[in-house]
Amino acid sequence: GAGVSQSPSNKVTEKGKDVELRCDPISGHTALYWYRQSLGQGLEFLIYFQGNSAPDKSGLPSDRFSAERTGGSVSTLTIQRTQQEDSAVYLCASSFFSNQPQHFGDGTRLSIL
Amino acid sequence: QKEVEQNSGPLSVPEGAIASLNCTYSDRGSQSFFWYRQYSGKSPELIMSIYSNGDKEDGRFTAQLNKASQYVSLLIRDSQPSDSATYLCAVKTVKTSYDKVIFGPGTSLSVIP
Image 1: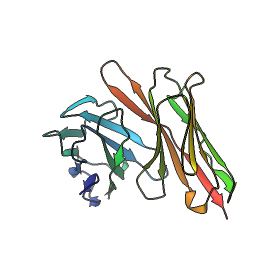
Image 2: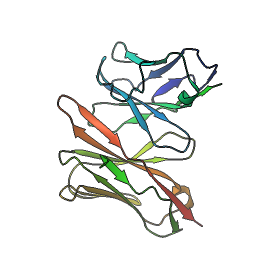
Image 3: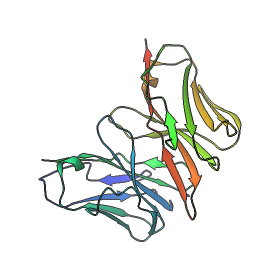
């Protein structure tokens, strides 16, 4: 497709389980970003990839959160031992270069029971 | 001082009026500026980018940048109820070895019919 694709669109899981969220950026986009947005709140930056490396991981809230990007394309965000406060919409965005506008996916709505 | 600040609103304007949304930033080295619109339950979508001082117009939208005052604004002329959304300002700065895009908290706009 032409846009940023995220999967799954919705995920419901039990507290303590691990989850993996996937982002497929626009083809050719070198920069990839993960954000978290809780209901009624602003965007919370998590991590930024340039190619396969992550020069800025400063937003990851704890060591339960990790992310990787392979082949300069698809990225996965993994949350281990999920907690109820992890419930939010997780948004992925990509841009051609980091000085270009970001294009957002539709997000993954994560609910922790 | 937060790096990117916006009035949280809500900002209410009557239909047909001009809506003025403001954003200030702290890093004088900031180079690229973006306005996004986010409808409730949806992902942010890019409205405009602006890179140099002055005004940039696109249809009913005008972005204004004043780097000396560290201020960027978005004007929406002939506001429509469909413009009711949260507007996010994003600013690109340059850190030691990488670019960083910082989003403001957003301003909620309500256009009253």
